[in-house]
Length: 215
Image (cartoon, rainbow, N blue to C red; front, top):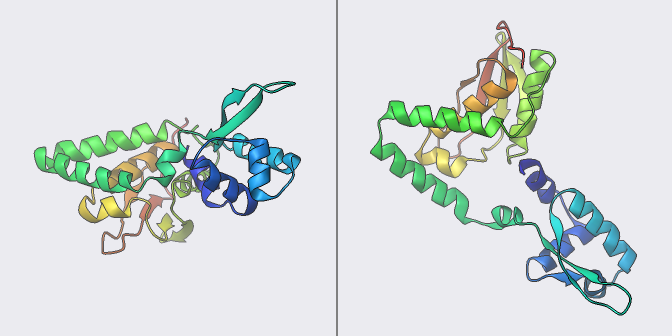
């Protein structure tokens, strides 16, 4: 789902206009073509691309004189993309949890959360550098802008901005979840050195000298 949401952010032109219309109600291809002033074939081509990316799906059908016509709507995952509530609710939930349990237990839960997040993606293979690049790419799909640098015998995964910024401001331990996720994906130890200031920024370090596990 993360990669689908990242693709959605990059959309523009006709596909973006289709999405904005489908946020309001379900449409037939003919209706979309009329609304946007383009041909039905052009709409079908764009719908096919949006279906491929998991953004749009057929919702139902309307009986026609020759054959049923499909109506289209946004997939259920799109509610997550457009909602502004998730970061705020997550931040407050973590604040409550961190207050109600010991820091040791809370950090253990964050580590388990990272392990669960990593389970949604196949383990990368190849050299340590290749694994780091692949894991960073997965995290970037969640909304970060990542780059990898070499510094003092370490590979540094640096983020310009933070997809969990609203949470990290109040609950810095959320970075343990990302640290755990990256460790699982890379198959090597990762240390988080994130900036938890007013504008949190991600920084994760991977020592080049360590062995990587065979996944």
